[in-house]
Length: 306
Image (cartoon, rainbow, N blue to C red):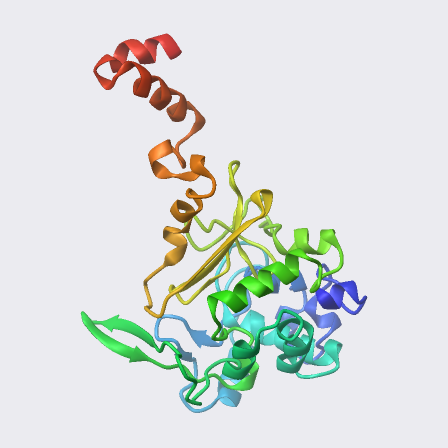
């Protein structure tokens, strides 16, 4: 979006406008489709095993993925795919005039005062950093260490290590227009891409949309922009309430996005489950009446409301 504001990028044009060494079958894919994982290009990573599709090298995997058929017609469905972000990284390299790691560091991390994030670096860092919380996962019921090492082209999808305070600095910098100047640019970050059938697609029934790099919860009450990472970290931004909640864990499967809404309930009381948040408007009406008249009178109360 910074490149869009600088007039160097258009999200609605085909990726081929910026990279001309791609397979013919990828030519119709747009920048927005890459960002929102609805491109249909094949994935360079086996997401089940979290390994490259070729065991030999990144170069061999890149060559192999370009020879594969499209997974589906662009815009037909949502499917998380790290090859999308590999291409986006290459585009930032060329249109930004510097490696994307440098572009992001200068354009975001320094501006938002994120020294620990800068030190931790992109992808995976083997440097010993004081107070770093290493990652863990359960494999066959046993707790094991996690460590991923990504080559440069895949680091756009590999994430970074940060702190809750520095992530808060980043969100505040975004809200204060230090990172993007135009309100329309921020709204574009949070507007879910539509599939060819007019619907939206996302990870789960909660994270049911995907915008320009951000999973989205586009519900009627308290919509959320909700970046998540590896099932262990989440940054939920509630644009209508000027509220953001950041929870970082180091356990794969901790899935803090599943419980951050309840934390939001401490600041927005109607978001607490005990107050009926998440229920349909009809069920909320019935529930409110039953709370007054008692659940023993449910049939009478329901007939009265109906």
